[in-house]
Amino acid sequence: MPVSVNRPGPWTHRDVPANGARFHVALAGPEPVGSDDVPLVVLLHGFPECWWTWREVMPALADAGHRVAAMDLRGFGGSDRPPAGYDLVTLARDVAGVARSLGRTRAAVVGN
Image (cartoon, rainbow, N blue to C red; front, side, top):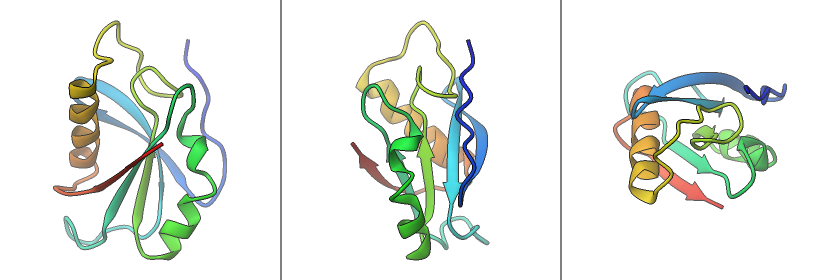
């Protein structure tokens, strides 16, 4: 069953494909002009949370000039819930795939 996680705020919401699944991402901060001209920070929530965990941190990072992507991990929030792929190797591939879907080759990753 889909979960509505699109809360209004100083961010936008997108669904992006990565690693064979669809991930909900809340985005804040300046839009990049080139591939890596604005630093991307990917925020990963803990269990059993979703992107909303980062709602108070996102505006500060955006104000500091970062492009912020708080993603719902596989199986959480507005992201797909496939029957498999809940291991750390798949998580790393998911995060790298989300960064690539956002047009990036590099990102700083912060986990909770």
